[in-house]
Image 1 (cartoon, rainbow, N blue to C red):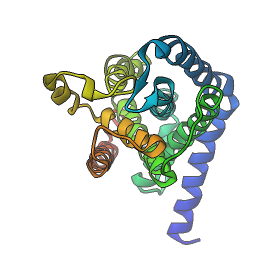
Image 2 (tube, rainbow, N blue to C red):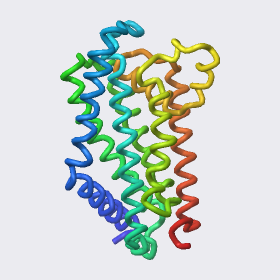
Image 3 (cartoon, rainbow, N blue to C red):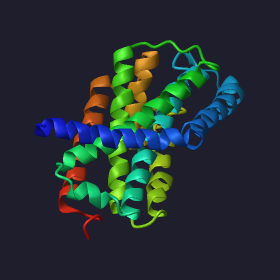
Image 4 (cartoon, rainbow, N blue to C red):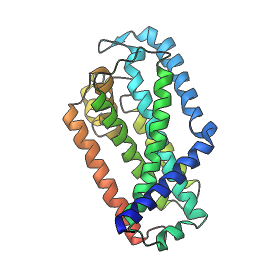
Length: 258
């Protein structure tokens, strides 16, 4: 068996483990985001949205659909990897991976692919839920799918880095609570940044989630507060930076070998 064939087998094994892990407990991993999103649509879309009226030429409930879908993708891609890899550290079976004749990029790719799988599954479920509340018409399938996958990869990598540094189960909830949630809610999910004063518009541009939400909104609705090429540059730039950093941590054995 060639090296590449062995690497592919290892990647498939890790990915299968990750998929089965969240699929076995779908009531905890897939169902809650669907229920939460339905509540968002009822409260923000139906009740509050009718008072707000149109935004950028769309009904308010249609305007928030892209952001709500992406919120689910972000949180689940992140949560899958951070919980899975930290559990591997806690139960000490990550050592079996480290002593296996595998390059670290295969291990990282396997965990990230598992996070992407959960993000995509949850995203599809949430999209189906949104069809009960909104007449979803996709403006660009290519842009929509690309942002969908790239966002999943980015936050799966971020979840991996969080898991590497985590020393307790409490540590894996700090970043989602104090960083991820504020960035998501302030990322233009429920509003257009053109409604903000100039100062806060410039502050908002420092939020990476803003670029993902707007790129995804362009894919679905054809409108965006951010030029599409700028959004993709930011997203891909963050993916490259997080991948390089995650590989550095793995190669150094930070939080694993020490």
